[in-house]
Image (spheres, rainbow, N blue to C red):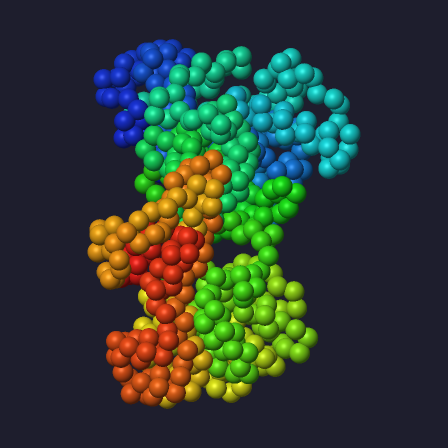
Length: 616
């Protein structure tokens, strides 16, 4: 970023920046300029002396104005590969910290990211493009000492280095003779006035004592405290470990105006975690970006990445999604725990009739089987179970996914890559030339993919895929509305499985519950008031939620001769549903009520899922 700044920003006025951002008012600025006249003190130093602002506030203001990321610490951000690219004497002389090397780009921390001479020299020395981020000068000295001491003491070091002096005895300036450069300042021209560099903290300055945190930002006992006493590495580890311990599927890191909110999606429902102090947001996000090999200098555009986290002796894959918001970058971490084994068909929670019919359908030599439902409804789990059931030496099974979530032995798994043209449609065409018996297409998103999948099913292949629809009968109408020819669909379609996930009641604390009239009205079914069910209570085993894990509820539509005739006639969804139910189809609500009657879930969960189905 430092090498790419336009000339007008390089010569920006500190006075203008501080006024525009609201760091000082006009009266305070005038007093600062008056104090500067006839003295060696610059404007920035004068404003600090007068108590109008601090070095950190001014650096943040410049960061906002110039669009350069600002960090108070580089904890957890310094990578050995970057440090090896810059000799220690050069880092001390140019007063910069090597942070991250990604390809031919080197990211460094500088107190003055506008020091074009230093950036040009480093570019010529390393042969790399140079991006710069901002940090206080005191952090430069500390980080240089830490980075090169760690490199020298590790086996990665190219040559042995003298043992460092204990930290408290180290001077916070470059060694004698190592540099003749003055501490860098941001030379920002004042309109009609003297140059106004940002002040630098004295080498011996110590940070001011931390103010006590407000009560609403304090954490509760029993969970790691996420405040300035924790490093970025510790914070990241604590958040990921807590998410794994809570069996979360997703971790949300959400910046607010004064705090960063941590939330965990547990059993399909978001629950509040601990608040992180806003001052740690930048370093926390930067740490996760580094782990996911993303650009730490890019804060204005969405980014997606992937990292691996060691937990309880196993490697856990985590997908990272970053979205810029008005209060900072929001992160969602999707946990893909490959240690979870692929389920068997008998472990999906299918009723006996559904299990028998679904198993028969997937063992046909050809046809297309669709699994439908919203995101996070267990569609992939069902498809993987079906593929695993068919996975033997006699079949060539190929999957096309976005992304590949779990690896299956003996199955050829392909991941889409839209940027280079590997879409579902393009990938499916190539798969058909690979002599497949079974094909799994992650999702049918457009007519082209739908037509190829249907043609593959008609020409002797067994195809599995997914759609986002509310129920099984509406899936048929969705495909017809996508312009799939009804005569092709009627010939190819083998069955549709609609499903949702409901939370499973905790066996330790669930208690009997009698059906109320209000619940019966919400369900819209005629039941006997007072019928026995169970309800959630909450205990230590289930983290006081009353639930532990999730189970699927299903709606299996077997495509019979009568259903095929209705497809050919383009019959309505109601007609399709009426015939399917008359032939034995159990609706999502029916299956959910059966599981509630068995004590597996609560009526509250049935109502929640049923309401979402009707409102979708």
